[in-house]
Length: 509
Image (cartoon, rainbow, N blue to C red; front, top):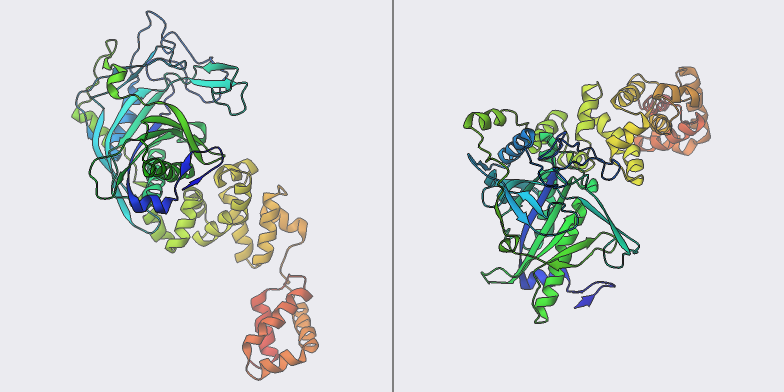
């Protein structure tokens, strides 16, 4: 058993999996991108000045009555449909009662035993092609809470803070909570499956255009419920709930850490506490939050100020007709169209480049060129800046037309690959379009055949031994002379043309 600095005791993940079966449940909260809040007309824009997007309804003031956001209900139904859920013909909102400073009403308007969508599934494909089916318990509607800011401490958390501030702008924003059934049988792949599930769900919701799913901004966040049971046992262990994990990488790491922590407690003869826990991105550990309440503790009862939601079959069928092509099916279609190998397509997907490559191909570039130029230097710079490629490229003013123009300079014979890379670096540095950069830097292949032949003759004369090998049929040696020609012409020779001239001069054409 090992310990980490500022962390509880853990055992190595492999040892924990050898002794225990992990049982995992994921609760994903998704903020909808409606123009107004769930039960009032306040705007939902991100980043506004604190407490400027509030009203008597979302602040829970006496006498203020809520009204359900129709667009939010439609989004909830569409989410349920893409998750293969049953859609309720009649459901109600409920009051979930608990006191917390960011809950101005002292209760959250949510759904309890009557969710809008239930009994679904989502098939998740792992990196090696294995498909794991995640069973969906429910997807229900609710409102988000406000946001607390703890000031005066070193960690930004309530412990050690001198005072706290609350911003209620987020209170009342429409939320969909998607709850899985307990996942068993995952074994050592549990962390990987958790990450893949959240990633697949994010892609689906983005395709639906119901949320911007920006995990770093909190519009999509995951609670990780985890317990362990000894190998061969059938009764689930006591679970912990790691709250508000806000990146795919952190979801995977949180599962892995909690497996090791639970195993350490159980192996030492201890008892796992049912509690919420906080994830720390910087240290990769969780710390105790508060004792986790059971449903009875929330004293749920039907919300008396809201009428039931009863979507007709015609409404559900009409919404079903608006569903987009599933992201996985779309990727397979595009891969076949583009002719990418599995590894090439996986790189494009992992870099978040599917849309950008598709737009670039539609603008006139070849699929190979689109993949090459977006996944190379621009991806490296974007990663260093902590941004995704589309966002980074847009900030630079670089788009699909830039790649089309660059590819045209290569196919026209003006630039070789090396020069094109130099031109692209200049474009990313803000020096202009590919043509403007090539003009300013004097990038162009030698078009004068006589000048190229003179360079070849000089190189052959300077390398008689290599030339003799080529005359004797050792054609592979021609690469050495091509390199010399490139140096002689300062990289402005076309390698293919130089090769042809060399072989002709040495009687191997």
